[in-house]
Amino acid sequence: MEKIKQVLDAKLNIYQHPDFILTDPVCIPHRFTQKQDIEIAGFFAAIFSWGNRTSIINSATKLIQLMENAPYDFICHHEEQHLKRFLEFKHRTFNATDLLYFIQFLQHHYQQEDSLESAFVTEAFYSKTHIGEALIHFHQYFFSLPHPSRTTKHISTPLKNSACKRINMFLRWMVRKDEQGIDFGLWEKIQPYQLICPLDVHVANVAYRLGLLDDAKSNWKNAVALTQQLKHWDPDDPIKYDYALFGIGMAERLKF
Image (cartoon, rainbow, N blue to C red; front, side, top):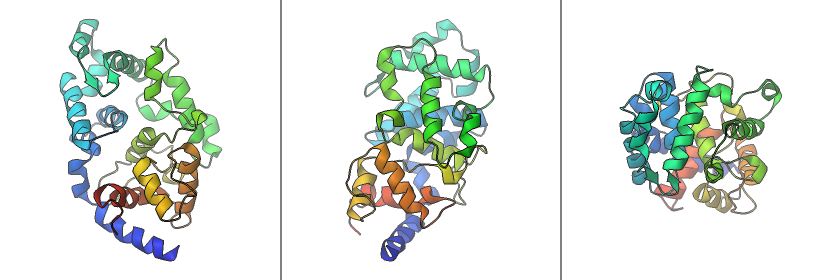
């Protein structure tokens, strides 16, 4: 395990670098300075994050442009006729039906709260060791309005043993703050040690090959198990190793 830590520490120094922003979906929220703009742009960029990263960035860019490059202002102040521009929008299986509900929910939320963080946090959350309950609460809250049944597939929940990779990645962006300026550290109620590693097929495969997981399944059980392993090396900020695991899996294809 000590050798594995040395490998991951070395890869962390390579991949947790400002240049990472340029080709990653995190570049979308980095276009903004206002907290709510960062939250909304980051949320959509994370939700779109499966498949080719160039395609993800292009879709998120198109969406932000449709929101006149002012996502928070658009969410709060748009009128019904402004929604027609989204009817042809599509990113893989995410289509206009899904997008219109997302916009409706975000408007509903920001009419009551000044940050998306409150959508995840309940009073019971503060005693929890990780954000599993927060993700369950968010899923229930997100779909508390009348909604299309097809749209539920775009927000994962631990209750279905989903790894919740995209939401966990979004939370990493919002909660962690690193010296390289990749993650924003905007939120204060959720702490970095409570985060769960964003586990997709690439990270799960690397973790399995390194002996950090018993199998290469990308599910909630393994996401929690991997995070517990990483906490042995950094109990305060275990998710920083996501950069190393992702870099090995995607950029190097396990060539290390």
